[in-house]
Structures are given as C-alpha cells and as structure tokens.
Amino acid sequence: MGFWLKTPPIKNYEINTYIFYPAYIILTNNHYFKVLVIINLNKYMQCKYCGQELPDDKNIKIENQLDPKWKSYYLGKVKTSRWNDYGCYLFCWTYMYSVKKGRSISPIEVDKKFMDDGVYDGDLIINSKAAKCLGLKYYGREYDINKAPNWMPNVKEVDFSIKYGKQQHFVIRESINGRNVVLDPYGGVQRAINYYEVKSNDPKWKTKYFSYRKIKIS
Image 1 (spheres, rainbow, N blue to C red):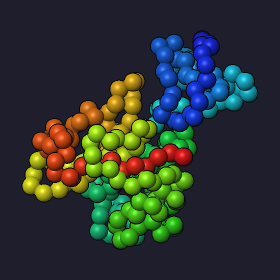
Image 2: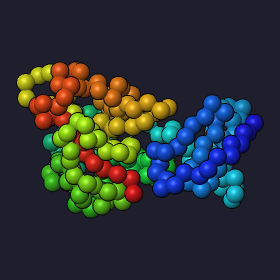
Image 3: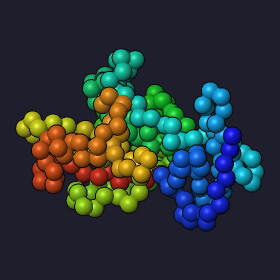
C-alpha cells in the first residue's frame, strides 16, 4: 500500500533532511516520494513525477570495525594498523561516502580509493585529500562543544576512555528518527550523542581531546 502527503518542498536539500512519517512518507527537494511496503517488508522510494526508484540511504549502517572479517586488513599500504584496532576513521569516511552515494559501500572500496589517490601518509588519513577523493567537503576542526556543525551526518573525534592521555577515536554524528546520536564503528552500534563525554568524564571538552571534524556531503 502507499500514501501521499502534500506539503511545501524543502529548499537547499541535504541528505540528512529526510522527514519520516508513521505512514512511511518521505519528502525531499522538490519531489514527493512514497514508500511502498511489500509483503517481505522491503521498502523502496518512488518519485511521484518521474517514477524513478531511489535507494533508501537511511538504511545505511555504520560498519563494525571489530568484525573478524576485517582481521587481515590494514590501513593503507603499510602493515602497521589493523582495521580491527585503528579502522574507526576509515569507517567514518566510508559511512559519509555511502550516504553521498545512497548505498552501502565497503571500506575495502574506500581504502583502495585512498591508496590510489595518495590519501594516506603511512597509516594516517589526510583530511583534505580524503574529502577531495570522495567528493566531500572538509572545513577543518572545531574544538568548542557548543559549535557543532549545523548539518548531519558529520564526524566527531572523541576520547575513547578515562585512561590518562588521549585515546583517539572517531564516530559519526547523525540524526535518527529526530534524535541526535553517534554511530560508533567500534561495535557498529548507535549510542547517545554524549556517550564518550560521559565515559571519559569530560562533559565540556576541557581536555581538548574532542573535536568536530567538519566533513560535509556536497
């Protein structure tokens, strides 16, 4: 079955501005989409005007860096940093790129693109090069907790634990069902937006171990 909703179109559309309704209505830039629910509960979106079927990018998940299937993978061409241990930033870039493309993309594909385009410095991802490689925008870092980017998804640098010193980790800031959360590649799970602030006992970012990495889907 399908449902229609007639409301004004959203201007300056970004991927994160999908509006979800109980009747499975999705409104996007100058197009109205209806979600058709078929017997096996799979869903797809269909443009009211042209009939084109589009991928539902809200079904894109953050990959789990701890999955044993990644145990033989390393960052870049050097064999120093396994994905299971240090793959969080690669997995965050992969999520951003997946949302841009509207489909789930493997970190294997992104890692290869990074190697081919010279994005890595050893096992470190160079932000400006990564953004250019994937067709994203990078606007630097923000260390003020009160100055979060006004778009989602984006990337957040966090302190992984209460241990002394910086335990660097990266997560995705995203809006899910109207609630701001983080999508964590460490386990491939959704967490509270301030999960790591609480975990590391740094609710106001006094340590400067937290930052917003201002990566934007263009």
